[in-house]
Length: 287
Figure 1 (cartoon, one colour):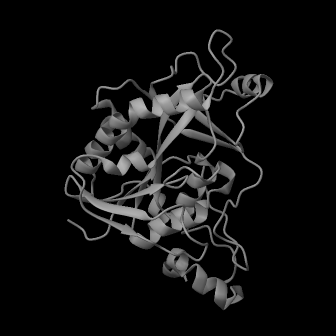
Figure 2 (cartoon, one colour):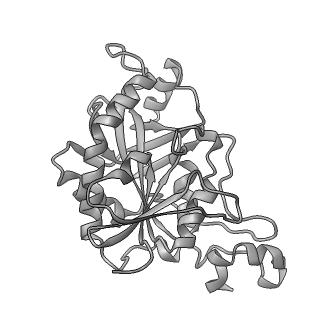
């Protein structure tokens, strides 16, 4: 067993109260981008060290636009996490993605407006390539781990991320459907993009809580609907995480761990020393 956690889980605090989690410790971390949403909980699950982080805080007091996504991802990077799984509530924009079911999406559309989307800047310019924002290898492993729970799981679909905190209007929901979007949520961007910049694999277990507001024969989305579905699916998520930890391989056959290899465009001598030091965890192997 490695001392550092290779698998990181971002979701609600209920995920790390699961049976079988041993040797638990809470870490109060500070990153160059501030503090993460909550203390990082690290424990041993199926022989694998796993890190857990409550995205919205332990009491769910942080709005989607207020989440310090950079600190959250960087904190995982500091711990040595290589693979990140997001547990996310979402609305369905497709008739066949039914509330209560789970989707492992394969594409992402960022429709947010007011978020920090990159670790870089301040004298270091990086253009990361991200045509497929979800790691295919980790997504496949997550799909299999979730299927093994017996839950109804769908593979694929485009996930659109809105700013929030309000839910969509009916006009917006219908436009997103006309664009071919399958799911709608508020937190997967810029989380996925930051994970790629940090050269981590990233995948989403999307729990469908509602039909957004486009479905005229269903009730409009409410907080009560979201919470009810998430509570029902907590045991599924816990079981899937156990399955994933048990099957986790040491090697990563994807390209995620080399995402920055051809992304740095600033000449090395032009990088300010303070920026180089601040981002050394991400770029030192290329400088």
